[in-house]
Image (cartoon, rainbow, N blue to C red; front, side, top):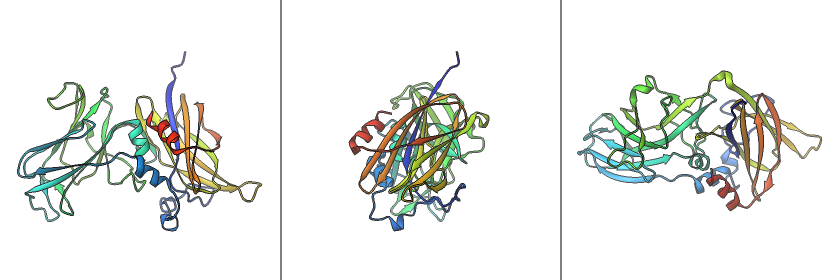
Length: 325
């Protein structure tokens, strides 16, 4: 009997700028927020329910460590920060830590896991941002980051991104010699809440998001096209979750067409997905009069096109569904 893996795909709403029957350019895909400031957007939803930053104050002159609410530990050597002039920084430093580790975290935070349009399987995303006053600081020495995990996968590599979930541009780049920075640790450290940890020791060129990922084999990927009625919808994007790991896919609009009804617009979006998967598709649409939601199950074996319909749903029911992931 063929083994079946489980894949959950979440259809969200992020930027509705569909102009022709072709893949839009990066410029054309950017959200046109300037003309929609008074309208509800999916970004409002992410801001309300996404993972919030935690803040710590440390002494730059001393070796210091911080531990996040979800178990991420960061060790900073003494005098490891420099300013924009390259001078060593002393005194008090503010550390912003954002831990996006679970399926629900990534979905509710719009924290995508893609590299050049290919889906990545993630073991956790972390932002560590050192600041002194209003100045973002750089690193003069390697820092050590310990990310908790339910289990360890030695196929995970280290990726970084200069983007942000808020700007819908969290695309990931694989670091050269990635595995040399990772210790796949299964012994519990003194302060760790988990017996399994990915320990990353690296001197980053600048403060960036880091992500532990592995990529799907390209020959196992096929295209799923989703057709939706985009009439009166404000914004659109896509998300996918795979097995015990999380894959979050950014919306890729392909076309906009008018149906026989001149007032109805049909939008087409695509995802590159692994085949032989049970896929559960969730959809969220933000309209002026509220949130629209639905879900649909398919078993994905080849490139295919499906239709998707939205139903107006109370916001708390949508959040409850996604938090359960």
